[in-house]
Image (cartoon, rainbow, N blue to C red; front, side, top):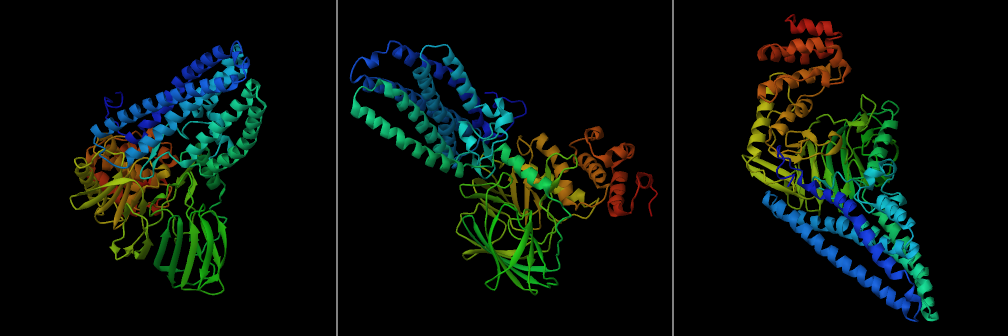
Length: 622
């Protein structure tokens, strides 16, 4: 109800199921206490030890109660799924595979924890009886394994990676604020079902161990002991498999680990050599296995450097079936050749990381990341100016080369045309998506967008018209990287680290960075800020950030979305020094602003002080 009647009409439908973590945390304590009270009252007088079959009677009683509870929780989970599905349908999400994953995520993070919490309450009753300390153990179990433990114990769980055994301690989502990623889908994996089995077997181990004292029959005691020997072995196997398959894309510790990796890299340590040209790529994609044959020309070095994402496991680099030695530093690979060559073959495995996830064979491989070997002399990320986190370094727009991709995967999007059984054509870069999404054909544009978005048939024209106007106006202040808006467009939402911002001649990838509808005022207001750096090539000048800010201010006024930008909100040194200049700039008429911005961009490298730029603003130009 809160979501439906939000005054800003916030979307973010995919992440709505993450709310169940709070529900589980609140409600589970009552089920634990209820289970504890019922079983502790039953065990209070020790009647189960008075009879030879007392053990069987007690186990059957407790098992029956647990099964009834589980069935009741299943009914509630199905009702919850019905509510979510109905809400998605009435909001225009349409019928997609999203609903099957929605069912699974509710079963995983609502039903399974409720079953385990009840079991925990039973065990506390068996261990502590009616003693008051039992409530302490209930509280500890509730907080440590609860649906909100990543918030309550953030300082602990934020340091546990997906491959750490301590990840098994929690029943909750990896990130309670995010349950869905564009095109990748929900935070579900076989690892979570295995984690549930791990806890089920672990609690069963304690249950049967504690119930030994009720067993009067020797044969029964022997069977229980044999079971207690087998269960730890099963526990180790199931736990190991759960850790092995645990997804890392939502894990905060894995995010921090990736950030620290790039922060340690030096951008000057690795000597690079780009004395070659790429003529053609031929790629064979089989699941997560990729073989890339790069045809080269004009090679003038025997130490060529290529950029390839550091997490990908390289099996081999060969030339005419002969192995080539290489050294790797971060995302840079330097080959050691005996002589210049005209062809190289890279064989490697795409591995999932927090920055660039792969889940259930779904991939979001955007053309500006090094998912295939590229001609580049820098890492993919560098430390932000504030020293906190890292920022993505986009590839410079290169010349179009022939690309051929062969794959059996069912592609949601690729910017290459299909010819026979392969995708082939000339392109500056290749964006490939294997995942969950929807498509729309409108006004000569082919738009691909996430499954958790409502239908955008009505809002897309407004968005496209806005982008077309922005491109037209951008040509008035600097050379744009494209002359017209590409016909193939991919829209995403909240992809981290600014990766989903790419515009080439044949396709356009844009992350709205907004939780609001595509044609909403909030989304449209953010477009100039995001588009200026990718539609007009950035310059390596200390004054570029200030120019970008001024250009954004001018663009906002041209598009009638914002009047002025508050300069004090931007903590950029070059902006702070030129605040007076920029304030004076914002008071000028649009025509004067446009002429100044165009001149400033063209002569940016010539400026050494703000005094020079101020004189340009006053009209003193060559």
